[in-house]
Amino acid sequence: NVALASNGATATGQDYTRDEVYPGSHFQPSYAIDGLRYLHLAPPPNDLDGFWRDEHGLPSWLQIDFSGSKTIAEVDVFTVADYPDAPKQVDPSESLTFKNFGATAFDVEYWDGSAWRLVPGGRVGRGKFGPVSPNDKVWTKFKGFTVTTTKIRVLVYGSPDKVARIAEVEAWTP
View (cartoon, one colour):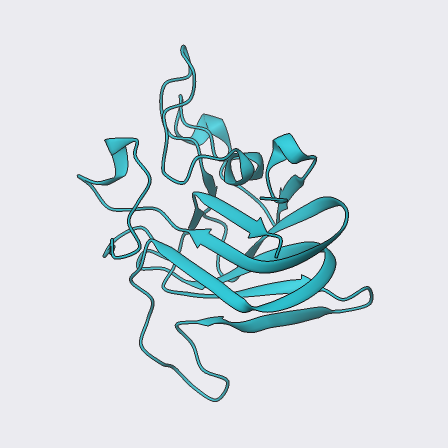
């Protein structure tokens, strides 16, 4: 997973919900590349949520910069599960759905050196010429492609409450 912070990746967001808005919670972009695929408890004494959250309006984006050029063949996006699944502290299954907190419409893009390009199959919950069925999966996989890039981003266009939330983004080499 070349999108992990421990592999040299960094994450930035268009914005994020500041900690003081919900004391004890943490919503910085870096929580989306820490290797935890779920809304997770931060280490004590900071014992509440850790994931990327932006309540400043949609669309909003989360960008992951790799440590150099990487060839990737899969991107996995993990949105936030509903309660009671959210606080379970376990990886979601591919069949787990949400109704309240996940991203219902988003794009996954890669940087080609001069412009952002859609990852093949990387449009979820919205069509080129109009709406399609909204996403309800916590875990969405994009594979069957190979691109070489220095960064990827997730653009969140829709969620039930108009707040962008991403628990984790992974990018896998072939």
